[in-house]
Length: 275
Image (tube, rainbow, N blue to C red; front, side):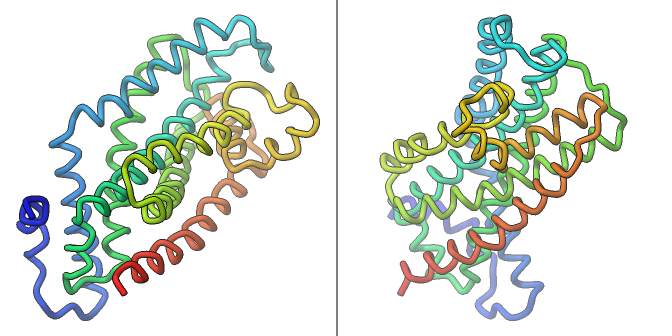
């Protein structure tokens, strides 16, 4: 009951009648505000996912493993830092949304939201949209850390801004994977353990850490076409002032496709829980 009462001031501003697209966007904004307040109230979570873990991975791979890994061009810092941007977005987007949705389910907060006269889609879209701000904060930290250890942007301004825009879209699409997982698992414990079981292989079997060509042949076919590899190759090429080929378009197609598939699945799952 305390949880439900705590959520009430942030959700009762919406009137009873909910007709038209304007109210739909209002609902999304209300839910996004609620989740942004949660970020501010739990700075330790933000620091852990957006600062500690990414910085730890950068220092570990660049200074411990970097000297033993051969990459095109020979500079592992220029090779790895764009990839760690992708890993941070994937891990943060999926982990935070999965655990957050599962926590709301377990504590009964989602039941309160479903009882309100608002679109089921707006409940989830508001949550996922709020993660874009968290990703921006994490990206800023990662860029500073990368510059400190020697990474330099060699592409033009259009390539740099385009790379970050595509990366945020990629994070938005993966957040929907977290939303679906959180609705299916429905407990924080299951979300935390289940998320890592498939997220680590998904990230490591890609070009984030090593060239795909260095993998066994039976892994290369998957890794070369993984959406994580495509977005990593795009950022690596653009941030180093190179031609990315078809990777940007394929990355954008993967991102849009994931949203178009996963958003309806998440909404249908939420509706079935309320039926």
